[in-house]
Length: 425
Image (cartoon, rainbow, N blue to C red; front, side):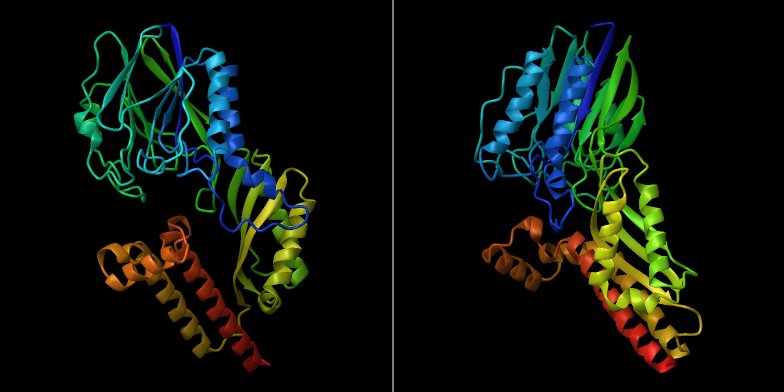
């Protein structure tokens, strides 16, 4: 084994993943956001070459699913070829999105790239650097068993790495695929576990390091903050981890408290201040959801014309020259200043918020009820897909249900506030 071994671990690249709700408006960096998964992969390859890493690992979901055309595959192969020219091997496992059964279009990878078997755990030996990589790709999208149980124990005389696309113990809020346990992974006596599937960075263990690097590029508002890969450096088999931020587009929630602000223009000024603060965190492009809250006399003017408010804030984003900014959505959850809601209205507002909280707590059960609880929802999903609505656009998904609940609550509160303002006048 080399004296200082550098391994770059990435997962969940979702190359060419379609972005829902990418509304184009003049001056917005929509093309940058649309191409963000490719740009992040370019950054990963550049980082691997510049740091002269000895191995690149991709732990599942290189692709988002079936290619729209062969350009997706050609783009990936072009980047892998650059790594081949640099003498850097790549080991890949496929996950639930790019499982063997999901892809009908395929192209041959360059010689430096090894895809581990989907039919059984495979050990791939890289003798020149003294590394043994163990792993298994997904044969189908929904792998419910613990694949790691069949992985071999560590190979003597090598630095051993396990690759697994997994929900871990099922407690991380992702589809429950290939669940595993910490003690099971440790029992293999590997030196490092390169995991994928969970889109947030997380270190499950330090000894040995068991790591989710998170996805390479956030794709929607539920994937906020810096995204990238993990560089692990072994010196005398002792690992050192470095989190690398490679995504050029960063999704952020911009929470703006306008409590005490008296006017519509004053609320815009506060939005601009918060936008500038957000845009000082290091990314080149930001996709931002604005969330206004607080008690303000401007409540009525904020809620009366959401379209104007949204475009006023988009204009502020265009004035924020520290970075390119795209405003994904504007949500208004403000309430009128004290004294403008009657006691009866306050009780009703409280009930609305209580029902909303209860529904959102059970939204995961609602989104899955088509499979487990109500046959009628299953029939509805079937009809939607027959109408050409794909699973990624499923209105019964957890994300879409949660957003719909927020929208419904906003509408109810706006109607209540409008009625209360009329009473006060």
